[in-house]
Length: 307
Image (cartoon, rainbow, N blue to C red; front, side, top):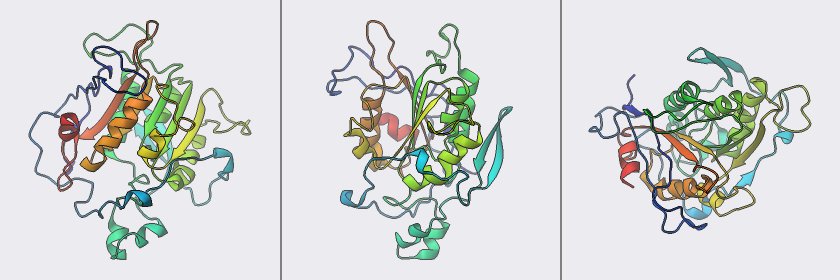
């Protein structure tokens, strides 16, 4: 498809190996079991992520963690235009979007024309307005592997979405999280670096697929609780009020490991979010869908696994 190969099958085993970690995460054994082509040599083809993305902004310029209230998003959302995407035989309604077309993005780099062509301006806009290939792959994987029966011995993990608490990192359009809601998840928390992506796409997408996004919405299905978090992962990881430690049965991320400089924060927020194993409950599970290699950027499944 013109992009680097993607690593998806059996994306992750239970996250904790050995003794369960303490609350701080220190001394934890953290591992991923990537399948597919993650161990193969990177394909020498261009990535969908531009090689000339702007240099990362200073930490003080990063967007701080914040909870975005769906009740404050107009219904219908201004400028939101629906389109339908089929994942397998399941239709999803999403907002039509051509990627980074935000007015403030053009101010993030000196060349405004270059910014308008880009899907990423580091530290300003992280690509949430585009529906990325691995998000579709991850959505399909969840729909095909959800089970309320016995553990799948061949896959090496057990995925039960019904009644699960789910966190989707780098959600953008939010299709993986919406797939979990369709399969009966108790709670889905959508997190995207850009709060305006949540306002203009994620919330309207959830509504368009028939879900109530806040208590005041009595005309849609209210079986799943939704929350929406914006801002930098480091900021979210430090806030117990925004991100409850060890609360999630399933953590999802698609196309989030393209930049090696973000790996430390990525691992930190995964460790913080996933449920630890107890005497009564199995540990939670994380699924990270990524291309094996992002040409010109340096990240990808191989590099993240090595981390």
